[in-house]
Image (cartoon, rainbow, N blue to C red):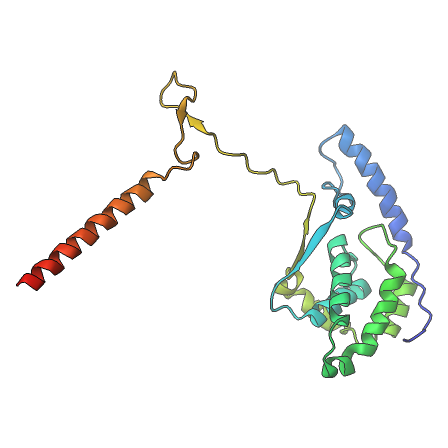
Length: 233
C-alpha cells in the first residue's frame, strides 16, 4: 500500500460553523424562526445514526462512479460532504474492496488503496458538513489525481440528478409515527360510541369476499347445468 504522507487538518471554517451551530440551537429555543440561515441539524441525524441505520443504493448504480463523484465533491465542492454522503463513501469503499474480479483489481486496486488512506484520515470526523482545508485538498488532489474526475467533469456529474439521488439511509430510530391499530368496534349512530364489532377486524371475511364466493358458486352451477343439458341433447 502507498505510504505517501497525507495530513488532513480540518478547515478553520468548521470551527466557526460549529460555534454558529451552537448559537443557532439556542436561538431555536427562544424563537421558532430565525432571521438568518444557519447550519443546523433539526432532526438530530448525527446522534440518531449512532443507534443504527441501513444504507440503500439504487440497483443499477455504478458504485465506482458514485465513489469518484463523492470524493471529487470533497475536493471541488464548496458545501463539503453531508453525513449521508460521508457514510455512503465508506460503504462504497468497503463494497468495492470485496470485488475479486481480476480485471477490476488490475484497474482499480491501487486507487482503492489510496482511497483507504484518505478515509482512514477522516474516519474520526464528527463535524458536518465535512470541509477540507485548501492544503488538504491539494494533498488529496495529488494523491488521487489519476482516479478523480477533473473539475469540469465534476460539475457535469453534479448535473446528473439520478447520481446524487441514487443512495439514501434509513435510520432505525425513525421519527415516523407507527400506524395505530384499527378499532375493534365501530359506531352505528349518533348515540352509539362503538359497541358494534367491526367484522373486518375480528377475522371474519368482508362483504366483498362473501359476494365473490357466492357469485363464483352461482357461475359454476350455471356452467354445470349448461354442460349437463348439452350432453343430454
